Image (tube, rainbow, N blue to C red):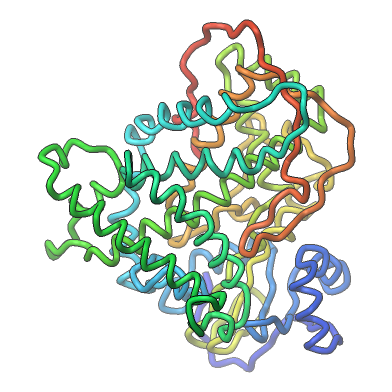
Amino acid sequence: MAETTTDPVRLPPSPRIPKLLQGIGFVAARERAVARLARRHGSEFVLNLPIFGSTVVISDPALVKEVFTTNTDLIGRAGTLGEVLGPGSTFSLDGRAHRARRKLLVPPFHGKRMQAYEYIIAEEVRRESATWVEGEEFETLPSMMRITLNAILRAVFGADGAALEELRELLPPMVLRASRLAVLPPAFRRDLGPWSPWGRVETLRRRYDAAIARLIADARRDPHLSERGDVLAMLLAARYEDGSSITDDHVADELLTLLAAGHETTATTLAWAVERITRHPRLLARLTEEADAGGSELLQATIFEVQRVRPVIDGFARVTKQRIRLGDYVLPARQVILVSISLAHAAERSFAGAGAFDPDRFVGNPPENHSWIPFGGGVRRCIGAAFANMEMMVTLQTLLREFEFRGTYADAEPVRSRGVASAPGRGGRAVVHRRRVTQDVPRPDAARVTA
């Protein structure tokens, strides 16, 4: 755990590259840029980045653990997602306010409540995949986007009917535009009128707020509200230790946060999973056999490995509030720290043969918390991690049971940035055929397996 110090500042090495070139390289090819610098300078170095400025990049598990476990009075949040999602988002909160909010958000995503969401996921998978055309190559990413969006709107927002249709139409363009602008300097997030980039986001946000206000009003009129299992109902019933409730505008911000954090990232991971397993036909055959038998161990290991080799988020930004000692370094106050997921996941010291896609490394051997970090860690670990994992398990298990995916030895799809998240460059393309005989197998145990 990091601690305060009065020792002189001592930073990791910094590349002798002009700041402008560092910024261009990071924006244009983040993963390749940091990998190249890590080969030259080691697992820790300093970059000058757009938005963040001087940034200490780390990936060593020991230092990652220190950052994730240090008191939030010493290391706090950094980045722009808070201003994009709203002041009531957990991305905007820090310290005591963040801890209190997190305490209210954790229960809906754990235990038996998770099992109740499983049927929603399977239903959405079957609804979407019913439109798939056999024998023709297609992009799976759009389908995965619709599956995860509809699942979150039903399980988290409690939306149905006209409200579901409205949010289904409204949210994808809003989240995508906001995601792309979130990684740009603040000047790009100014409302210069309804046709400016941020003006369009603001227009969509006002429509979103109005839709959520109607959902909240409908929920409060529901005589069976206390019996509902959706997250919106639970947030309305939740109370802080002093007996106060979450304000309606903060509920809207939190729902948007849960959607932004879990919709696109889960969908792109699912598209990457299809891209990866279809390029490993022997693994694909084993996964199909396991799904038919009602098992999930290899599938869970495969999801872990997909998240390792194709992380959809580059890293997590934090900022020091005081001068601290972090490992062998001394960081000044207001120093930005970037925990690099791609570097941590590519480290041979943590994953032997790290360059290979090998799900068997995780069979019976779950990943270690501070070397495998797609969901972050510590008090800011993704609240919806268990939900996302369950969603991926149920989606893939359902598809493997109902479709035969054609294996391929085609070249890997390139990584394409979608703003905050990175997706398969060709959309996770696949060719499928419906399986004519689907075995009657035991109910999937995916909801009881968590990351």
